[in-house]
Length: 129
Image (cartoon, rainbow, N blue to C red; front, side):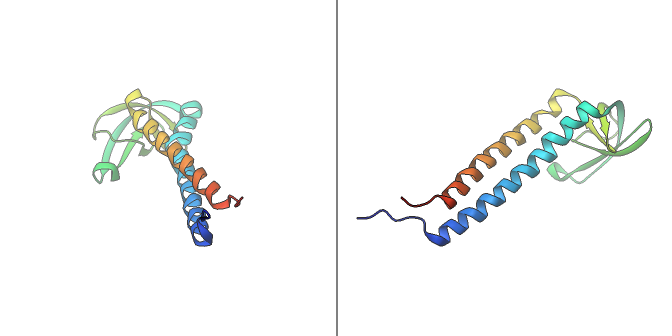
């Protein structure tokens, strides 16, 4: 009995899913790894005071002020606390090591998403032999 391939529809589904996962990988890495790393290298050191946080859980947004300005704070800190951070492009990124653990986990999620995307795309374009 001959081995059957995934067919045209399967290839199309794999290609679309692979491209979507590749896009998700790029978005995750830019938001959670590249931008904060760039802030650590090019940003100015500052002590920021958290003014307020809107929302709850992972959907919360915190705001802070520092000498020379104010803006969004990346991460979740209790209002009223002072945090060491790097300020870059109007956004403050905390410098504490514990603030980088979620980034590293999301970076690994992005890596897994990229590997899965590569598998799906290779399966979609593989020729039958």
